[in-house]
Image (cartoon, rainbow, N blue to C red):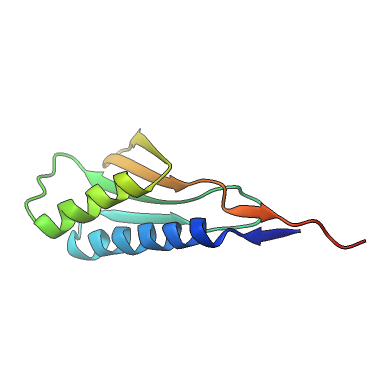
Length: 100
């Protein structure tokens, strides 16, 4: 039986909140989410930035820095609009032995 790892779930929620903050403050940015699901070992949030883009707002820069610091992995992809950063939290699930 799988149970959600509370520490990993909390980290994911914190990442999601930071990504949502950036999405609200920067209209051209697009937020994508892959929330926890039992079929996947990881969960992620992604932000697609158009290029070129200059980020002057310190709150946005701090939130972006937080995403890089708190995730387990970062993936970058070139898109039609610009660049997409995917921030992933790994090992979301704990396995619990079922009673016999």
